[in-house]
Image 1 (cartoon, helix red, strand yellow):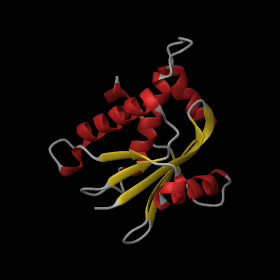
Image 2 (cartoon, one colour; image 1 turned 180 degrees about the horizontal axis):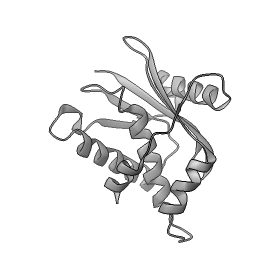
Image 3 (cartoon, one colour; image 1 turned 120 degrees about the vertical axis):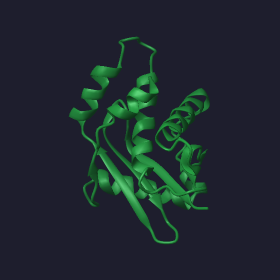
Image 4 (cartoon, one colour; image 1 turned 45 degrees about the vertical axis):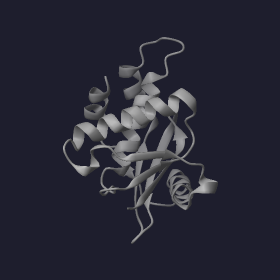
Length: 158
Protein backbone atom coordinates (compact mmCIF):
# COMPACT_ATOMS: atom_id res chain seq x y z
CA UNK A 1 0.00 0.00 0.00
CA UNK A 2 1.25 3.44 -0.94
CA UNK A 3 0.06 7.00 -0.70
CA UNK A 4 -0.25 9.63 -3.39
CA UNK A 5 -0.47 13.25 -2.26
CA UNK A 6 -2.34 15.76 -4.44
CA UNK A 7 -2.46 19.53 -4.29
CA UNK A 8 -2.83 22.45 -6.66
CA UNK A 9 -1.44 25.90 -7.00
CA UNK A 10 -4.29 27.94 -8.36
CA UNK A 11 -7.89 26.79 -8.41
CA UNK A 12 -10.60 26.26 -10.96
CA UNK A 13 -12.10 29.65 -11.80
CA UNK A 14 -8.79 31.37 -10.93
CA UNK A 15 -6.24 30.05 -13.46
CA UNK A 16 -3.50 29.19 -14.25
CA UNK A 17 -3.56 25.90 -12.37
CA UNK A 18 -0.70 23.53 -11.53
CA UNK A 19 -2.05 20.21 -10.22
CA UNK A 20 0.66 18.08 -8.59
CA UNK A 21 0.50 14.41 -7.62
CA UNK A 22 3.39 12.92 -5.64
CA UNK A 23 4.41 9.41 -4.59
CA UNK A 24 7.27 9.44 -2.09
CA UNK A 25 8.00 5.73 -1.58
CA UNK A 26 9.73 3.51 -2.60
CA UNK A 27 11.15 6.02 -5.09
CA UNK A 28 9.85 9.55 -5.39
CA UNK A 29 7.80 10.23 -8.51
CA UNK A 30 5.53 13.08 -9.43
CA UNK A 31 3.32 14.38 -12.19
CA UNK A 32 2.40 18.02 -12.53
CA UNK A 33 -0.28 19.20 -14.94
CA UNK A 34 -0.46 22.80 -16.06
CA UNK A 35 -3.72 24.40 -17.22
CA UNK A 36 -3.30 27.80 -18.83
CA UNK A 37 -5.83 30.61 -18.60
CA UNK A 38 -6.83 30.02 -22.23
CA UNK A 39 -7.39 26.28 -21.74
CA UNK A 40 -9.33 27.00 -18.55
CA UNK A 41 -11.60 29.45 -20.40
CA UNK A 42 -12.23 26.86 -23.10
CA UNK A 43 -13.49 24.37 -20.51
CA UNK A 44 -15.45 27.02 -18.62
CA UNK A 45 -17.19 28.30 -21.76
CA UNK A 46 -18.38 24.81 -22.69
CA UNK A 47 -19.25 23.59 -19.17
CA UNK A 48 -20.68 26.57 -17.29
CA UNK A 49 -24.43 26.91 -17.78
CA UNK A 50 -24.61 30.50 -16.59
CA UNK A 51 -26.42 29.83 -13.32
CA UNK A 52 -25.16 32.12 -10.60
CA UNK A 53 -24.77 29.45 -7.90
CA UNK A 54 -23.73 26.54 -10.14
CA UNK A 55 -20.26 25.34 -9.18
CA UNK A 56 -20.75 21.81 -10.52
CA UNK A 57 -18.56 22.54 -13.56
CA UNK A 58 -15.75 23.59 -11.19
CA UNK A 59 -16.00 20.35 -9.22
CA UNK A 60 -16.06 18.25 -12.40
CA UNK A 61 -13.05 20.07 -13.86
CA UNK A 62 -11.16 19.80 -10.54
CA UNK A 63 -11.96 16.07 -10.34
CA UNK A 64 -10.78 15.48 -13.92
CA UNK A 65 -7.51 17.33 -13.19
CA UNK A 66 -6.94 15.31 -10.03
CA UNK A 67 -7.68 12.04 -11.84
CA UNK A 68 -5.36 12.83 -14.77
CA UNK A 69 -2.55 13.89 -12.43
CA UNK A 70 -2.57 10.58 -10.53
CA UNK A 71 -3.55 8.05 -13.20
CA UNK A 72 0.07 7.24 -14.14
CA UNK A 73 1.25 7.03 -10.52
CA UNK A 74 -1.44 4.97 -8.81
CA UNK A 75 -0.98 1.32 -7.94
CA UNK A 76 -3.17 -1.31 -6.36
CA UNK A 77 -4.25 -0.51 -2.76
CA UNK A 78 -2.93 3.06 -2.87
CA UNK A 79 -4.55 5.80 -0.82
CA UNK A 80 -5.12 9.17 -2.46
CA UNK A 81 -4.62 12.10 -0.08
CA UNK A 82 -5.96 15.41 -1.41
CA UNK A 83 -5.41 18.79 0.20
CA UNK A 84 -8.46 20.03 2.10
CA UNK A 85 -9.46 22.68 -0.46
CA UNK A 86 -12.90 21.09 -0.64
CA UNK A 87 -15.25 21.01 2.34
CA UNK A 88 -18.64 19.56 3.21
CA UNK A 89 -20.87 18.63 0.28
CA UNK A 90 -18.23 19.73 -2.24
CA UNK A 91 -15.81 17.15 -0.80
CA UNK A 92 -18.45 14.41 -1.21
CA UNK A 93 -19.14 15.40 -4.81
CA UNK A 94 -15.44 15.53 -5.74
CA UNK A 95 -14.95 12.10 -4.16
CA UNK A 96 -17.96 10.80 -6.13
CA UNK A 97 -16.60 12.20 -9.41
CA UNK A 98 -13.09 10.84 -8.89
CA UNK A 99 -14.44 7.39 -7.98
CA UNK A 100 -16.71 7.50 -11.03
CA UNK A 101 -13.68 8.15 -13.25
CA UNK A 102 -11.71 5.31 -11.67
CA UNK A 103 -14.74 3.03 -12.00
CA UNK A 104 -15.02 3.80 -15.71
CA UNK A 105 -11.32 3.68 -16.59
CA UNK A 106 -10.34 0.72 -14.39
CA UNK A 107 -13.57 -1.29 -14.27
CA UNK A 108 -13.00 -4.82 -13.03
CA UNK A 109 -9.51 -4.12 -11.68
CA UNK A 110 -8.23 -3.40 -8.15
CA UNK A 111 -7.91 0.29 -9.11
CA UNK A 112 -11.66 0.59 -9.64
CA UNK A 113 -12.44 1.98 -6.17
CA UNK A 114 -9.47 3.75 -4.53
CA UNK A 115 -9.53 5.13 -1.01
CA UNK A 116 -9.67 8.92 -1.04
CA UNK A 117 -8.83 11.10 1.96
CA UNK A 118 -8.79 14.86 2.39
CA UNK A 119 -5.81 15.85 4.53
CA UNK A 120 -4.18 19.23 5.20
CA UNK A 121 -0.49 19.51 4.30
CA UNK A 122 0.47 19.87 7.97
CA UNK A 123 -0.80 16.31 8.58
CA UNK A 124 0.60 14.58 5.50
CA UNK A 125 4.13 14.60 4.13
CA UNK A 126 2.65 13.51 0.79
CA UNK A 127 0.26 16.45 0.49
CA UNK A 128 2.97 18.79 1.80
CA UNK A 129 5.34 17.65 -0.96
CA UNK A 130 2.58 17.97 -3.59
CA UNK A 131 1.93 21.51 -2.31
CA UNK A 132 5.63 22.36 -2.58
CA UNK A 133 5.92 20.97 -6.11
CA UNK A 134 2.75 22.66 -7.36
CA UNK A 135 4.09 26.03 -6.15
CA UNK A 136 7.47 25.42 -7.76
CA UNK A 137 5.73 24.56 -11.03
CA UNK A 138 3.54 27.65 -10.89
CA UNK A 139 6.68 29.78 -10.57
CA UNK A 140 8.43 27.87 -13.40
CA UNK A 141 11.06 26.28 -11.17
CA UNK A 142 10.12 22.67 -11.92
CA UNK A 143 8.98 20.87 -15.07
CA UNK A 144 5.26 20.56 -15.69
CA UNK A 145 3.19 18.85 -18.38
CA UNK A 146 0.64 20.83 -20.35
CA UNK A 147 -2.80 19.65 -19.40
CA UNK A 148 -3.99 16.70 -21.46
CA UNK A 149 -7.43 16.73 -23.05
CA UNK A 150 -9.97 16.31 -20.24
CA UNK A 151 -13.11 16.05 -22.37
CA UNK A 152 -13.23 12.24 -22.18
CA UNK A 153 -13.26 12.51 -18.36
CA UNK A 154 -15.77 15.34 -18.27
CA UNK A 155 -18.18 13.50 -20.58
CA UNK A 156 -18.18 10.56 -18.17
CA UNK A 157 -19.18 12.90 -15.34
CA UNK A 158 -22.27 14.30 -17.10
